[in-house]
Image (tube, rainbow, N blue to C red; front, top):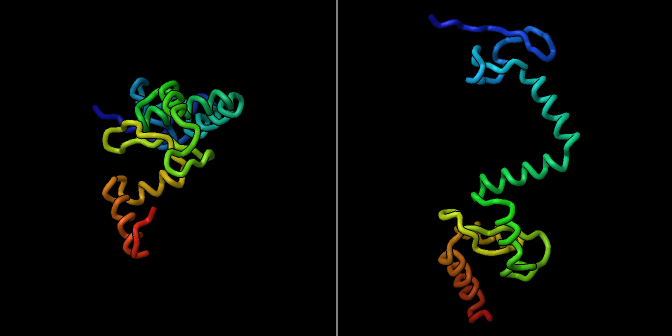
Length: 143
């Protein structure tokens, strides 16, 4: 028999709410969380404010893992390979440059150079085509 739950009582605020106001949770018998979404969001927001540094660290580690599949230690080691952009030598706003196909670290670049490479297709051919274009436009070899 299938039971269609239309509403539930939040164990935090004690209000009866539509079931759409609860997150799904397979671990609970009902299939939903005991607290409503707004109570959970409030609790998480309060915790993150009270533990700001820990929250930032967790978020950073999570992003490193999601984006690059690496740990904080691997990130620090890779970024330590250069104190400046490996293209323009700028020392501010440095980025972790990686191959988007393999995920492998390529080097340390400033945000502008990293974006420029991406805009040129993230390939040596794209960068060479831009280089050739500028050479042709100026009618001479560029140093």
